[in-house]
Amino acid sequence: MNRLEILKFETKEQYKEYFIQRYCKRNIYTFSGIRVKFYEDQFEHAFYESANHKKRDKSVFSIKRAERIDWIEYVLKNKKAELYVGWNRDKKRYNEKRRVSIISPENYVVIINIINENEAKFITAYLADVTTARNIRKAPKWTKK
Image 1 (tube, rainbow, N blue to C red):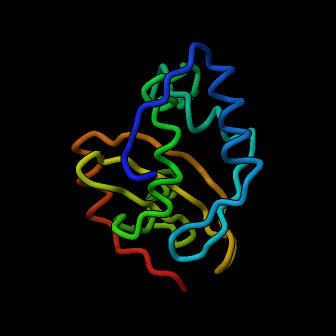
Image 2: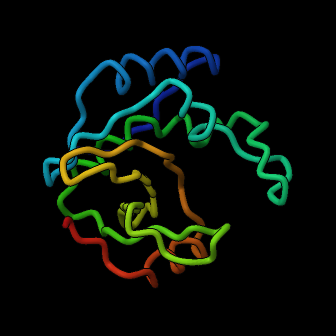
Image 3: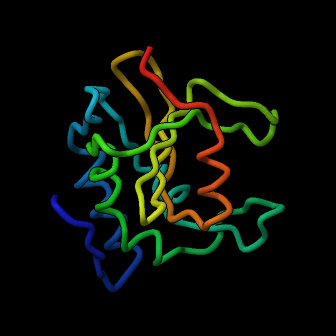
């Protein structure tokens, strides 16, 4: 994939089936050789948003997130992606097991959880607003151990 394109489906079920076929049933690797595992149950976490951000309920399907589903692999394989250590908002500290990839100028973010040096689990992906992108870029740089 050479450029970022928007994917248009008519239903959220079509996006979910696409996610399963494109990610859950294939081997996806980062540019540095980490295999990223995708699970069907992550679809709701990645492509839904909270109606109430304090409750973090993930109750509203996000077409904005779903249309960018193909961007996930693009970012994971992009050697120019910026890599940062993830933030654990519940514990209020950085988590070395979380790798946050962000690309410019889109500020598209993909977060994975590192299982070991060769394997990770997909957590979520989204377009970051300017403030969120700035905060991500304040985090320590992530380096493969």
